[in-house]
Length: 392
Image (tube, rainbow, N blue to C red; front, top):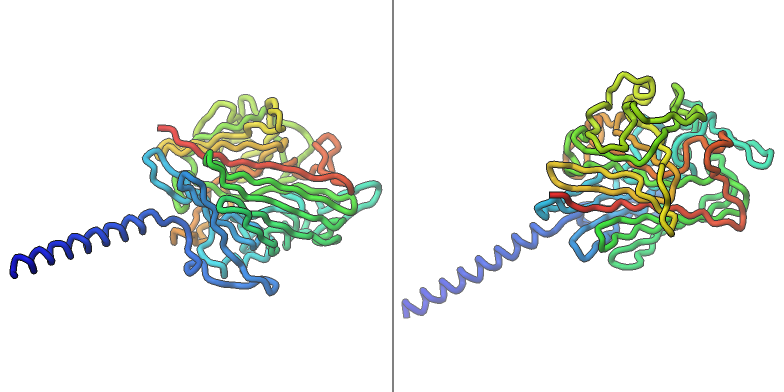
């Protein structure tokens, strides 16, 4: 009888141990925010929701309908360990508070869809067909940044999860919103592909001539969200020129060759090597915050490799691919430890970088820049791909 009881105890302990191991393994494999962690909030009477995308390799991306923002993006390192490589907030309430696009007032644009016009417009003014338009002046009271203080980062998109790996967001931007002309129907799709890329496609149509320049404002740190610097990230940008800026960070209209300057990333090198170089443009931008003019031939789909970022310690590599003529390389110069992210850590200066594929800043006021005018009967199309791999 004692032997039977002892054997039963051994079996029970064995199954309890297996159960605990299974629980531990399941907990280890769980990545991303849960609905309970994200919580609830409302903007304009609509619920701020969290949506999860997965691919067959275990990558996870999470997005919210508030600003059609990328909240988390988990990518593997050279040992197969996953980390969230984008900056973001942990709760719906914090996203609901992202309603003021005045720099320094509390909207860092983490993961945001930017529109109607990404980047800056001098004086908030432009002319189409002889008609002058005045848009919202949300930066220093003298220019429009990222569509105005209530740009697309602040609005609620309608969401339709197409599959486990893709979601569609739509928004009708009304005529006159932030001063922009025309009712603009916007559609964008986030797709987490099985080649470990997150693909963002944009479409837009208008009923009146307008300007459009849509982009994504994700902040990346390939060491993982909450890591303190991107100085050790090795960057390559396929560009022979930048569009230099004045003291208001508005393009002068010129093209400046990067060869032999701190802006030359045609040969890969660490971002920290020259981020504080003694260069007039570096000083104006407080570091890197400039539009690069992309070089090289496009493929049959109009896509080109824009940039490659590597983090040697983790082995993570991010390749940026797009059909856009430019990319804004921003090195997180204005992050200031005031935003606390999903890791519970605050984000210090230069703890993340942005590579925003785009048409050029202030293009409506420079005839020599690629046009951003969209007319009725035309369809705006833009593609941005952030593709992840590892290098051991």
